[in-house]
Image 1 (spheres, rainbow, N blue to C red):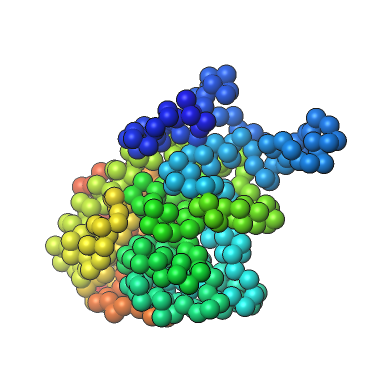
Image 2 (cartoon, rainbow, N blue to C red):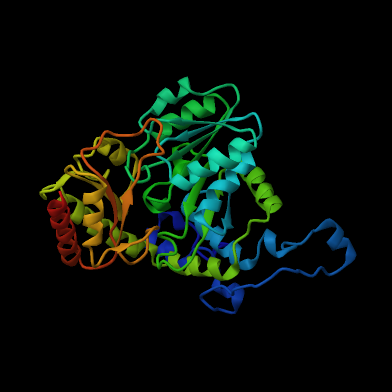
Length: 395
């Protein structure tokens, strides 16, 4: 058995086999198939010499436990990363690496279609700390070289984009950033490492809201950040300095969810594609923003780089405004109106683009983001029909 409990050469095994067995060796814990949940702050040392040198594996609860190591090893096996940290939320998975790698006077490039809390953090705390923040168009590709300055330290990517699902040319962006000495971070929550491995495409730091597909049940908050060899040391030391560690029960819940993520994600993918394809022919829908559809303008780029698609996409209503958007949402009975995604239940939210600088559209009507859960597709279609009928009546 390998150190993490998987068979040597497990890279040749199927993804569900790896998900079921990565992260721990049951024989390290008397044969129990799940690792123990270690609740720890204080860790005792055998003597003063070891204590002074901190020359033992665990020294304090904030710096790691067997529970956090089990999840980190499992994520590293999926990401191909040198190390992974677990933090209390998806947003913390964004803020911790940014704080680790940018300083006052640095220039930070962020894709304009980014997750709104990322933008809010950059526009408030980072600017207050003296970081110059600039937003770029999601379709810029290699053209990002024209925006990179001598003080550009980080290029922050997210692909596909939050809410509007543009696909970025990550390898081209990474090549340009690295040529200028900048590092590349990517929020890869949509695809998970099952469908896109950022470090294989030139990204230095991969970010995930593990709240979503890894946890999978809408009951836990967690984030993971994985780094390549060059960036791991700085990321880990900054993580320890900030003291932003996740609790052991949440870590365990995500590790538990990881075991079934492959089969859940496959269901999300198939159901979302069936509904997205169907919606392209429905009256009242101007566009479906799903990169796995051949009609999507970035479909070829998605097909080149991604191994699959997840369960979240957006639709553009055929005209109208907030009144029609709200009428659609209020008519839904199976889809809940709630933020987040990746859980077992379907969700819908109104999309607001008022904070964007360059990626504003145009769009034919209001946008609605749909998270397709694990319910039966025919039932979800019927619910969406009710929403479209309500929007039509409101127009």
